Every structure is written in structure tokens, then in C-alpha cells.
Length: 118
Image (cartoon, rainbow, N blue to C red; front, side):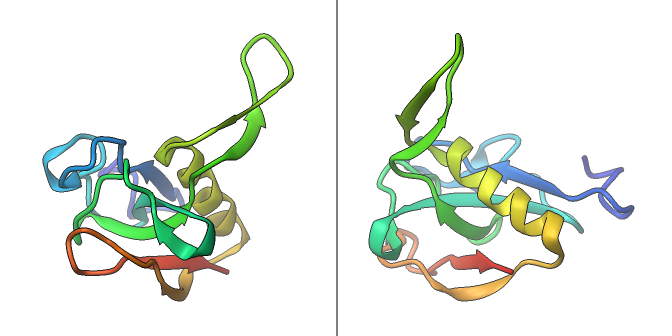
């Protein structure tokens, strides 16, 4: 990813779901141009307790709790995780640049992640 990041590619990485510092986890710890590590939040812009944290590497926070998604074998399921949050950021990145839409409440590292918007 790092060798691709200076080009037109943009990466939205899930920070993982261990309630620990993402700087100590791969690939969440990857940092560079056009590499965005994404934490998760619930309704009301509140921190998702399972989400990894840390600035850096976390760049933005996106909805990641009770997300309806397609499911293996067909149909849909409502699930939670940073793997549900990072596609929100990927969609924003496809539309253009990601911007700060405020801060998530209750980030455990005391340095609130920006909520990514377009």
C-alpha cells in the first residue's frame, strides 16, 4: 500500500476491533499519503467501544455499529465493526477529498477522531 499511495490510489483501512492502540496493529498502523485508517462510531457520533484508537494512525471515524450489509449465502445482516466503517470512508474518497465533519464523542485516547464527510 505504501508504495502505491503516492499515486491515484486511496486506501480506507479498518482500524480493527480490539479496543487497543491501532499503532500496534497491522494493517491499521500503515500511514502515508492517501492511506486512511478508520475507526468506528455509533449513533449520536459516539465512540464504538470495540474500535481501535490512536492518532496516528487513525485518521477518521465513520458509522460502524448496526450497519445493514449484504451477507454470505445471500440476503442481508446487521453487523458492527470497523470493517463496516471503512467502506463509508471509501465511498467518501470516491466522491473526492475527505473532510472533517466534527469529532466523535468519547474517544478513549483523549484525542477525538474527526468524522469524515465529503
